Length: 347
Image 1 (tube, helix red, strand yellow):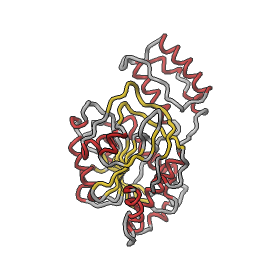
Image 2 (image 1 turned 180 degrees about the vertical axis):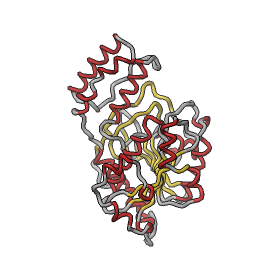
Image 3 (image 1 turned 90 degrees about the horizontal axis):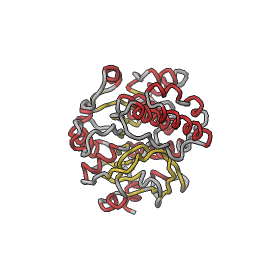
C-alpha cells in the first residue's frame, strides 16, 4: 500500500516515481485507519531533499499493508538558502505547528552541528520543545543521529564525545537481547554511520536506556527509552540511507578539502566500497593531492564507482521500521497499548 504524503501534495521526485502506483486507494481511506507520522526534517540544504526521499522510500518499503499518512515539518531556525526556503514553503509546515497536535509517531532528523555545545545552536529551544511535545503527544518518536544526541542531552544531561576521526562507513552490529523492535532480525546486521561524535553505552544504561545493539568498531547504534507516554527510539547511525548516500557525502568532503575548507583529505568510508571502487578512489586521491583545486573534482570516478555499490542494510532497516509501524498501529487500536514493548524494555 503506497505511502500518502502531505495530504497528496508530495514533492515531484516522489510523485513522478510513484505515479504508476495506487495512490487513490490511500486517499480514500479514513485518516483514522492510517498511521499518522510527522517527519521533522532538519538536514542542511545539501541533504534535505535526499533525506526526505530516503525516508519516503524506507517507510514505503516498511509499510506493507499499513496505510501511512506522512506530513513534513522543519525547524524554522535552521539556516536556509533561497532555493531550499522555496521548497520548504511548498511542502513543509513549521515544527512549531505540532505543539498543539497529537499524532501517532514522529521522525526527527539531525542537522550539521555548528557549536560544540548543542544547547548553543539557534534551533535548540524549538527542538527541545519538540522533544517535550513528543513525550506527551506521540506513541513513539524516532531520533536520527544528531537528534538522538540532542534528545539524550535534553532529557538526561548525557553529553556526546568528539571522535578522533569521522565515524564514516557501514559497520557490523550484533543484536543484544530480545526486543520487539528487532524481532525477526538476524544476530548480525549492518548499518551506515556518518558522524563526528558519539554517546556511549555506559552513560545510556546508567540513565535507563536499553541498548539494543553494539559494534566493536562503531559503538552503539540503536537504543530506546520510554519518556512520558512515548517510546523514544534513537539511532546514532542512518538506516534510512540509500546506496549512494555515503558516496555523495565522501565527494562533498573531498570538495571541501580541494577548496581548502578542511586541512586533511577525508578518510575512505569503511566497509562500503569493494576492491574495484577502493582502487579507483585511491587513484583519484593521489591525483587530487598533487593538484589541490576544485577543478580536480571533474575527474572524480563517480559513475564507475556507483556500479560497484551494494545496499547491505536496506532489508534490516525496513524490518525495524516495519516493527515500529506495527507498534504505532497497536497504539491506535482498542487493545492495550504498547504492553509487549514496555515489557521488553523492563526485561
